[in-house]
Amino acid sequence: MQLAHELIGRHDASPVVVIHGITECHQSWGSLLHELANDHLVLAVDLRGHGQSDFEDPYDPTSYAADVVDTVSALGVQGPLVIGHSLGGIVATAYAAQAPCRGVINVDQPLQLSAFKEGLMQLEPMLTGDEASFQTAIGLVFDGMRGALPQHEVDRVGALRRPNQQVVLGTWDAVLHSSIEELDATVDALAAAVTVPYLAIHGIDPGPGYAEWLRARIHTATVEVWADMGHYPHLVDPQRFLQRVAAFEATLPA
Image 1 (tube, rainbow, N blue to C red):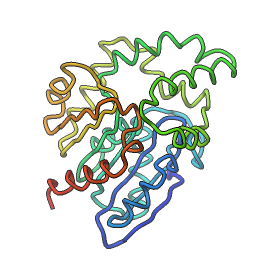
Image 2 (image 1 turned 45 degrees about the horizontal axis):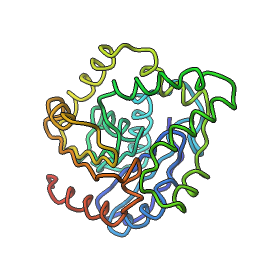
Image 3 (image 1 turned 120 degrees about the horizontal axis):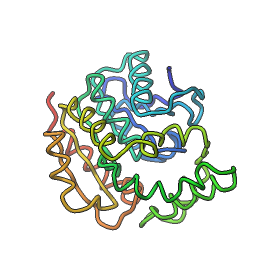
Image 4 (image 1 turned 30 degrees about the vertical axis):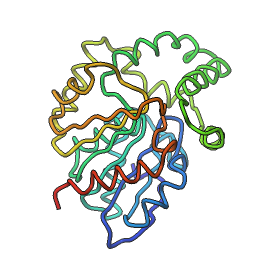
């Protein structure tokens, strides 16, 4: 599937693909898109079932990533740096497992899904309930992760959020219904296919031992914790994020 998207910036500059989080759209990146476009060609996509893109099963990271690959190919973008936030971090990882890219930046999406499964299972009755219960559950998820995000950004991103029960449950199906061992096997297989430089930035500390766990699976991985920033570190301190992107790019092969 080719995705709804925005393509901005310099066509003679290095390309960057930007992928949003669950229930959101490419506009959630806000002014960062235009800041990146000052010295990049920026492709910002809406994943299937999000934003202006079509609704179509299945909603899983592999299918999401295949859509991004199709869109990148259709637009003639070659060898991008792929940046994903939240769900987009897993999709960016899956992209690198499927198609050539220069590197991956994963913003606040741990790949060790056991802790996420534990929390999500507590909300399953609400997530699978009526519309009001579902919306309440989504609100609880995001309220607990706002961290240091300024109120105006909380309001802006919240206004863009469009939670759809079918899409959310489809996206989280494997987490809800797979065993820890099955989840670990899925992540191990995905990570084993990632060979490009990989930067993981976490505004919520993924816990002791996570960096070692990730590097055992993605040998090129660097893990940074931007303490107490919450789920949106790129929006809490956009200038720091842009500087980190530039520094990461400077280490990538030409």
